[in-house]
Image (cartoon, rainbow, N blue to C red; front, side, top):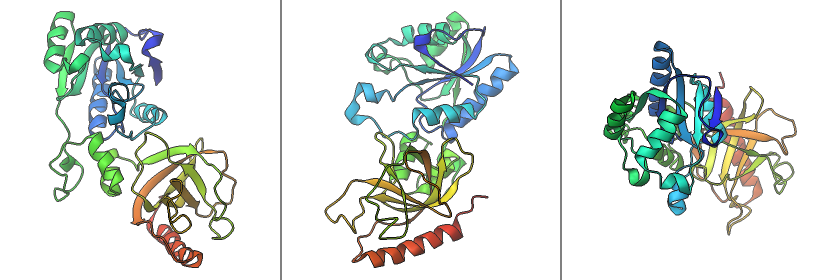
Length: 324
């Protein structure tokens, strides 16, 4: 897959494309449904397939104080889109100029001039342009005049993926719903809607060294990534992978402020004890995936009590998580 930015100009070496456009944070089940149709229709009609998205969430520019925590970093989004067989990811710079761009100007700049679209597939609730003035009906009118087709794709429902008894079964799948699931520790639901376990990336930093010394459980520590959705404070079963490596390792993961040692509140960290691993992770970029919520964060009376609980946590991870 080729990744292009709008500032580089239009997609070259293609005569026509099938495209979709959206924020596409998380690349969840509903996103995959649309993108898969784009890829399929592009192959059927000998066009190139294109996903048009943004280099940041629009609200980060429009109303920074209301910008949602993201499910994926830009690097993760690029990798996930590529995994679906897309030919091009066309990233738009969302800045002040884009904020005030009219829907019509957007169509002529991006849809026609940028990606040479012959077909556009978007969700039925798609809106775009200054003050969200553009919708599917508007796109279709311009398309009739300029020679491209617009196809609205129905919203995917949670009940397509999860059991009808799930409390959100009657809701449309959305990035905001998945964010709520993650921050309330409904990892089973979030993983099903994402088709993967929610994960965060970062560089392993030095800690206070209690893990390797006092506790006997050395941890790989990540500072909480800014602007990314982090699960509820607590202990999780999951995995850790060094970026660039294809193998993941089981991990017992703690998210929080270490109340046993910092009763008044310490820095919030993601600490991962990696099972059966004795390499040096300091300074390496890793990906931590959250598979299962085990328990809330607890302040223990002593380090010995904490170690006894960690022993149980590690055993539970070893017995219940299968890397297959």
